[in-house]
Image (tube, rainbow, N blue to C red; front, side, top):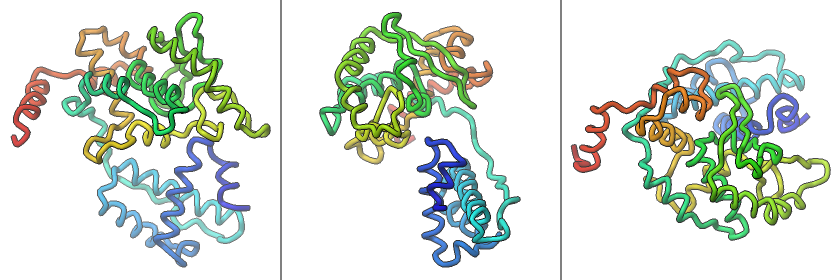
Length: 290
């Protein structure tokens, strides 16, 4: 059994590519030592990643991928033991929302209004993705998992399925979105759908150029096409910005909580911006050397 086949058996389609990428990076770094790696070898590799200033969450994801790799080796009889089964990292993840560094409304509107897809055939699809980021504040996982049955243009709504992080919810579509979605379903979707192999046909709403489910990494690349490194936008930060703007406009916390799909009100309240934070943000914009 090949690694890809093992991943397909054990993990969701949305996570296979990222796990495979992290495992291949580990194998490349370890060379011939990878299959026979020890607890110390894995610890040293994590130390190298830590020196690259990877986020604690990324470190944990890499370790999880390495654990999958050694589970695969044990399952296929290439090893009798798992060297890092009981290795856990204690790197602290800072979960505070850096409200003062979020994107202003003008940046989000500019992203939607001025985006031009590299391939003109993808323009409607890409504009839909951007609209879901800046109007409904969807996470990229939620966007990639949308099905055609989740879209109700007659009533102008979209149904978001719940996941481990967020609750399911039903959100209204903007008038310009309804027309955009209609044109996409009438013309573009059929073109993408025809490219699917009969054995892999799914009714995902947004498809890639091969007619398959759109990967989360593809969304990130799309919104940052031709942007300089310092100007790159982060999808999660777009979601956070939209939520923060809603609270700043004095919308009720409970309403914003339902809109965002947060399971706890405290998660929503973390986006509130105090007067001091607003002042700090203004100073940084006017006096960047401060």
